[in-house]
Length: 72
Image 1 (cartoon, helix red, strand yellow):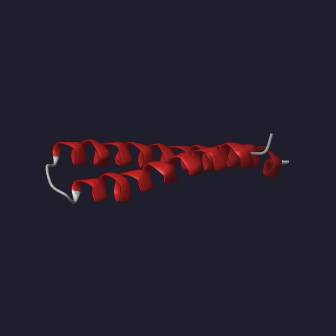
Image 2: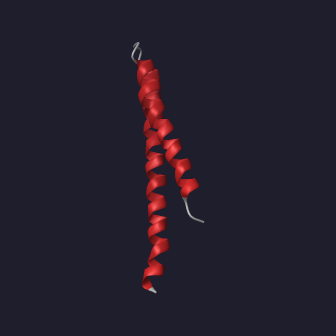
């Protein structure tokens, strides 16, 4: 009986941990993109698209994957 009571709590902790990680990835990606807009150098586009875009895309994909794979 105690095992079934703990299962939803663990599931919610797992989902909230993944949502928190996806939020952190999105925020870090936006910070990198914002800083690369200030940086006046040819490599700023590489930082904007390569690093910031990948972090942003990873955060969005993790967020959507978490929502899609969450049990109802």
